[in-house]
Length: 228
Image 1 (tube, rainbow, N blue to C red):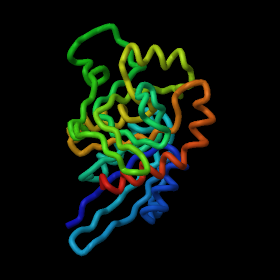
Image 2 (cartoon, rainbow, N blue to C red):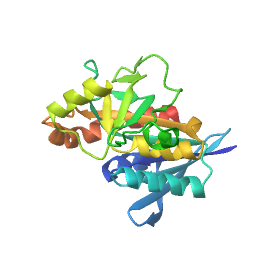
Image 3 (cartoon, rainbow, N blue to C red):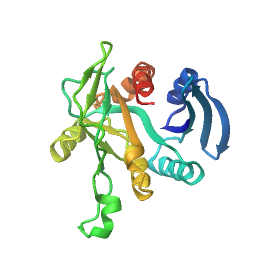
Image 4 (cartoon, rainbow, N blue to C red):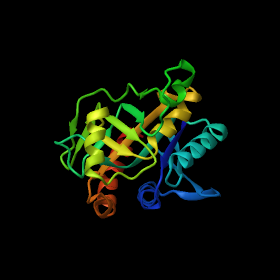
């Protein structure tokens, strides 16, 4: 039995760790998007792994997701990336979130028409409703809210306003775009989102983000192996 598992990430630094862990090789480049492939085999099953390096930005993520859904028939779609911690005081830099609610913050339309739901409606993934897990090296945190927009958050006043308005726990730059495309293709039931905490989205976030990237990603790749 062969299953196709698609992993979507944004930065080369993140992709390199996944390529190393699963021994993937480059398949093709489509402008700024690079696709890698490989296999995980046992006596009972064979997983075809496709890694999509999208580049940063919601539009890049949406383009890459659309390409994958038009050209492959994935059995699972996993978005994995690092993120900023907005609201969870108990979470540490090395912890990993599996959020279940997703909001696009920078979409503003002062109308509540149903035909705008594709852009405005929250996205909910019902797989992430279990209890949190202590994996000894770090916590795997579930049931939380992920905020997506096209800005790197490194402003404490902005963090405060986002906490008050949305109660969001983590912020990043792709998840809603990927899930929005998957919602249009009616494959949300195949989606999983993994976010490792790299910074506190505060005034020190820029340096913390890069300093903690590899460390946080290794933890998220451990979770990725469990999810695959």
